[in-house]
Length: 157
Image 1: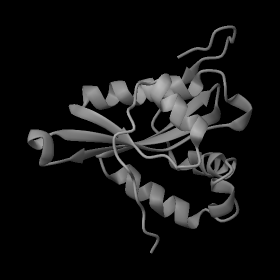
Image 2 (image 1 turned 90 degrees about the vertical axis):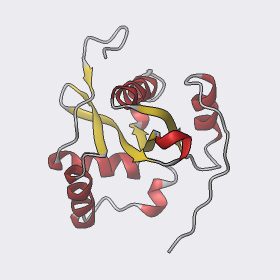
Image 3 (image 1 turned 90 degrees about the horizontal axis):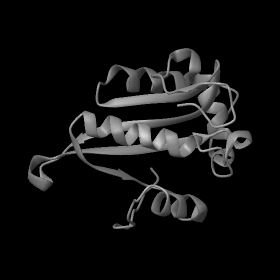
């Protein structure tokens, strides 16, 4: 996907182990992530990357703009007995660099993920978002057509 008025070409390749520091930096470059992520030590992040990368049900991608990682998301395919045994897609850990927001990159990344989910046989795409991310929720509804159909809950362990 290329951006209007921008000669660079933004690609959505599968993330590599070498992308992990840049992905972690995107997680830290976020008001919520800044309180729970650590840009210093990458050992646990690398182990998590290896587990994600080894499982074909997971696709961790980056937004690559001429060699610079400017965004990321994880797409997970979930087999389910509900909806007649349908395959669902879960979108998680979406981040776009704060310096690049408002340029359509997030929408392009989501469009890629939705198309990828459809091509892999998913009949439903779902996501969760922190209740405090009001702007993100508005974006998901108004720009992408998501419906706030469920109440998500988490239990920290």
